[in-house]
Length: 173
Image 1 (cartoon, rainbow, N blue to C red):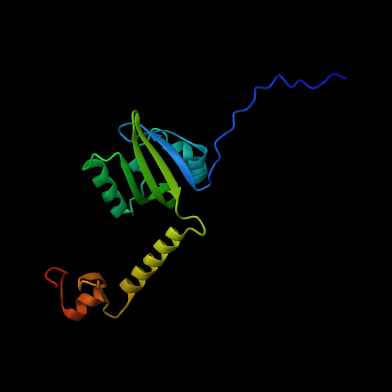
Image 2: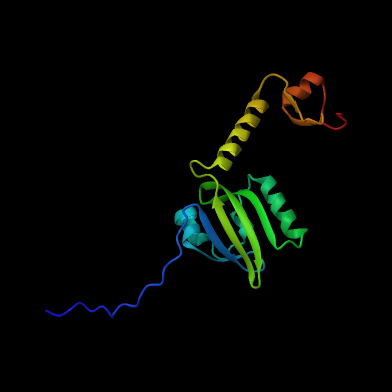
């Protein structure tokens, strides 16, 4: 009986732990995806390979207009080395609420993507509550206008305008 060959395998380097809701993308200077890690692959699922060679903003959900405008503003009109924003990604048929952290490097950008839509995530629960609130206000048959502490109109629904016979919020004190 010969002893097992313990020298034929190279020792494995310890791999970085995969955090199930945090992924990393490497981007070139034009924000095109060059590579991703196992964390992003876990978030993206079977669509992960489709992101390679695509611009980062091509992954954004077209329904998240506010996030897209904010991203464009931060990238275009600032010399910031770091960008932090919440945005919806569209990966195949799935849309994910994510936190996107971008840092400029010597060879491009490093992006960390955190899945905020995972169960038990307080940011996700807050966003869902806020969306539900907006939907209730918008669908209400009664005129609803929400004022801030400074007296400015923060939220309103179409019935609010009909009730006050207004066409827009312009010139409303």
